[in-house]
Image 1: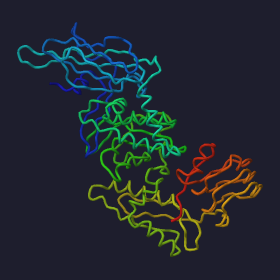
Image 2 (image 1 turned 180 degrees about the horizontal axis):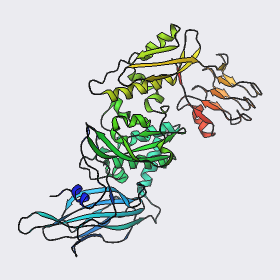
Image 3 (image 1 turned 60 degrees about the horizontal axis):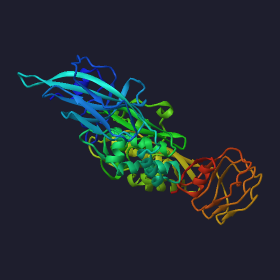
Image 4 (image 1 turned 90 degrees about the vertical axis):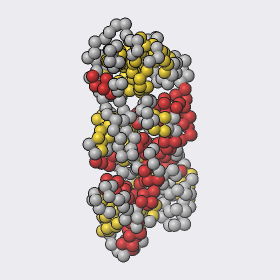
Length: 485
């Protein structure tokens, strides 16, 4: 039996091959052009839907007229702008060889324009071989008229259960929700978000579409990224995601994060482009708009949660020792070893550790707060960089409450509130020309008028803290920094 991929090639469709990449599930992206194929249609053979219009969630009935002893193969696609070419359909379902005169597909919950590509084979009476007979497509529309969309309901329920105290936390929770609710479909039959929500299985297109739906439902800017996975001269169509967190775009691959545990369960969670595409693992073919700018490591999963420490070996201890010895230019070793042939994995690990060290406030020999910038060379365990004193004004360690008008018209530019501080009252910093302020995790009250009259400034606060949530709620510029080491 001729495989569908061969038929698609004959039909001049956009085809992607299906090799396996070293334990990573691939082959989960298929697209096909609306052009009719080069095969001559032999009337009355065809595959058609019983209607031109369906409502979201309504089963679509497929009727097939094929030669006696023959068979047909179909694939369902959607024209939803996933590809910059409006003539290209993103494939959602590929059930393989079929002979039944009719069948149903009941997983279309998203309104839009859909297409069934079909390839019909006849059987040679003398040889018994299957021969191409017809290659064509039919189109239909899915609408939403009742306002009751079960897919959207499921997405809203998932977002409600995963909503965090900040966008970063929400993105991580939704990433983990996708991993917990899907098993990779090795048969490569299901490619839609619906298959993940209703069947809990699918390929990379399912992971990517579902994650994108959840992010958008949560009000977080996101984009699906289409491209290729490549390893040892093998290529396969692949899909992953980009999400906007605290003003920066980051890349996520839920599919590849779902193939093992521990470090790798979040390895592709918040990476910049150069690390995501290390050794051509993720070659971007199409990414819409501003999402193509992914350069930051600030909201990488391991960096921002502080879990980089689990993979830093003795680097943190060496950092403290060198600072205590009075050094400000430091060189530390992660001591992490993935084994032969795993140079790329080692480099990703060490880049994450370097970013984690740079996102941490350290104390030097004089007790001065220090921050720094660190880098790593591929193929090396050595992380190098330098720290410098962080020129922040500080208050007495015993300060618990910043009272009303406490610092009105003061000249603070950079202020660090002590850990003992729990509240900031109204007008506490009225008309203060702040640039940055650190508000710790123990602060549980900030009056809405605490910073009235202040120009634009940055609130630094721990991830998930009251201050971080308050800053986001009140539209203040918010960033974060890990605590002392």
